[in-house]
Structure formats: structure tokens, C-alpha cells
Image (cartoon, rainbow, N blue to C red; front, side):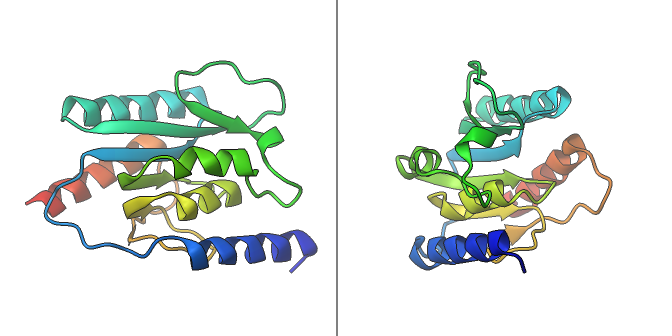
Length: 171
């Protein structure tokens, strides 16, 4: 384990120790969603926006937080975004990114971190959500449900699988 990994592990452990405890929720009371994702690829961005629109059409409120793999100035994407300049030397999000998540409580977090990026993982762990859904990850976590779509699936296939689980849980 190198020094970056040690520093990241310590910072993540602190988040997991101080984050809220899991809560019991009733059958399908979800109204608000936070979706974390890698938005560098335009096709993946469109798929996540389409998923968000689907949730909104079904009476849900959604917020999107996207990582854009760049160092330059960010343009307005109509959602919260951050990039490499918002990460510290060991890949952990800087405090102002965490503050975006502290101001709102969500019913459901969906972590579409299909590349297991450590900064998206840390944000998902820190997010104030009653129910946390994530893809498989290699770091400690506080997720409620892990959805393993298998390797080689694109973001649309992953989203479709999550929708199937929503339908199962709602029945």
C-alpha cells in the first residue's frame, strides 16, 4: 500500500465512522434521489440524464453530481459537477465538494461508479441518504445495497438493472 492509498484509507475510515447510521424505511416512500456518476463520456451523461427524467416523470425529485475528468474551468452542465482540480493529492474530494452533499438529505443515493473511482466512492459514503445503492467497490463502505451487473455492461444496462430492482422492491 503506497502513501496515497494509506491517506485515502484513513480519510475514508473517518467518513464511515462519522456518517449517519442506516435507517429503516417503509415500503417505497422514496421521493428524493441523488445520482453520482462519471460524466466525462457524453453518451453516459445522456443516459444518466434520461434516467433522471424517468424518475422525475414518476414524481421523484432528483439531483445529479457528476465528475468530469478535466482540470480546466467547468462550464454549466445544468447539474453539480466537479473535476480533477476539486481533488486533493491522494484523490479525495476537497471540502467544498463534500459540502454540496451535506445540505440535503436524500431518500435514495445511486452511485453509478462503474470504474470504482475513489473520489466518487468517498462522496457516496459521505452522502446523507437513507438508502444507498452502489455498484461493487473495492473499499470499505456504508452502502445498503450492492448491484452487481457483471463486467462489460454499459451504463444503460446498469440503469435498467437498477430499475428492475426498484420494481421488485415496490411490489
